[in-house]
Image 1: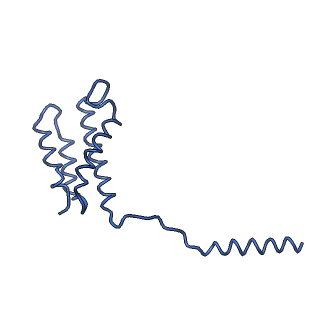
Image 2: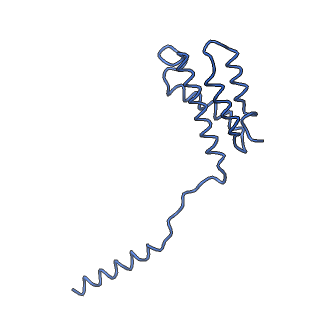
Image 3: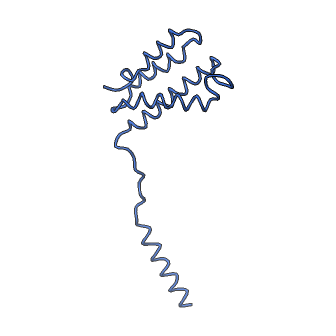
Length: 127
């Protein structure tokens, strides 16, 4: 009986010591610009691939073999563009860019140019 009591006391003291140790907090970037740029890249890529789907540019023998291929290409393009935004992105300008993409007609080259103008990094980046 004495051995069981000794074991229980030892166990309680070990568990008790670990109880006071604070949980480690996950590391986060000093600013939220990385997360905002990543979310914006994803939004722009998704909007562009939605348009590509609407315009029959996704599928076998098309510009993009599938939605995943489109997203990879568009994400890389958006990340490269937004990588020039060290202070983050201007949310109202991002919304304008996304609207331009969603309003694009499939047959009009001018619409593509307008989307490119609305979605330029010098327009989307915070000054």
